[in-house]
Figure 1 (tube, chains in turn red, brown):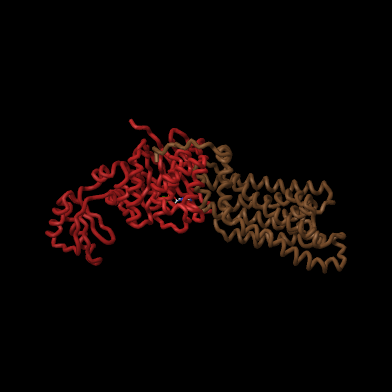
Figure 2 (cartoon, protein in one colour; figure 1 turned 180 degrees about the vertical axis):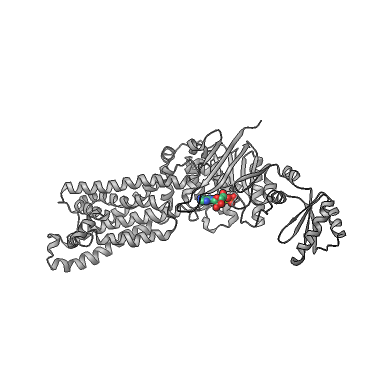
Length: 318
Length: 276
Ligand SMILES: Nc1ncnc2c1ncn2[C@@H]1O[C@H](COP(=O)(O)OP(=O)(O)O)[C@@H](O)[C@H]1O
Ligand SMILES: [Mg+2]
């Protein structure tokens, strides 16, 4: 069996804000285990507790209760030793925008106590890796969002970490920047770096993760491989139907009646109906037979978004 | 990247060895790196400020004061009285500016502190390194101020060096408690508020521009409790000499105690903020 690098049992975090505000239980007792070389993802909507979990694993935020072991050590007693072997990409970039790209790497490498010559050598390689070599002497201020994200990732690798933590690595980036980042992360994965990432994009989770836990309201509601989760919680296909807003409710009722007959399930979203069926075309034929006429009809494969909807009754991105 | 082995067999520099042993120096190095971009401007300000103030107030206003044979200064020329007072006040100013805004900015979610806290640095290392830099800034500005004071012929160079200690102590007595607070403050406007409503009024109670003997009786006691008064008194006795040693020791202990309390509070609030 592969080495267990991270193990959490009953991990819980309560944020107690200053003043009179009520405390929030951001992480409500979760168990998970990450083994060497795997790409492990936390999928969940905003406020699910993903960042809070990542900060605990990054050994910058002590758990309120539960057990957490990272690289065989307890973050409460061995924070610096753990952090020395982690790479951390926080949700908000913490680059120094007044320093240059290279300076950001030099400063960060120094924080690990590395000798200057070693940092310089690694910085050159990491800038190549992040495709920022031509920007090395520019101020971070002048970089695009995608470049900053790549620099943050490059920086997190300067201590040659065994585990890389990525909190929403591509949120807010345009599709092209996202794909470039995914490709770089995929390379790291192939080089054997253990990845732990959070996302609320199901395509990101599907692209990068071997194993996923679905989080909602501080709890883990499902766990498995992307394929496994879809197979366990969804039908193979989904039929998406759009109606004029005033007719959707009526159509939904009619289709729900028919759906029972063909072993399908209907989800009503504000802007569309989803019919979960193993054969989408069959389901569409059945819909047509009821006399309901959708504006558009689309058959697609079920994805993690559908898993989340099935488990929680809500969509991932609102 | 994993296969990135350390092939560099280059000899370690002294800085490499020191920063590996003393993590606080890494944070100090970060602030120095930033400072390298702006040092010229700060030197100009640190020299121009006392030059202008001493020329206008000391030499200009001082002529009027001295011509009226003000008995309150006990025969000290006004310029000599004012210079050490302004020096201590500027140390407070620098302690405030360096201890408040950069600390506040650094502790935001996109700031330097969370970046450093994600590495092998401890919150205490981050604090120690930044304190060191603040001390460096307070001392550097103080020495430049002293150079101007020497040029005005108020103080001899040897005495000026003696005054550097009180200047540093005054600056840190403000900076350390401020850092403890600024790291956990939620809005920058609170820092500005503190400056306007606490720091500025301290000038009037400090004996910088006039001896506190001029104040009403009850206010004199209040003034004697304020840190700037203590800093001004200590700096003045060091720069001009002739003060009583016991009083100087009391001033120094007051400022040391305030600094120590500030550092203690800061080490708690940094840990709370950066590891919570
Ligand atoms: N520092 C904090 N203080 C108070 N509440 C917090 C803090 N950080 C997060 N929370 C709350 O905890 C919950 C989970 O937040 P977070 O972990 O950021 O979720 P996610 O990353 O999945 O969006 C949210 O309700 C959020 O408002
Ligand atoms: Mg988050």
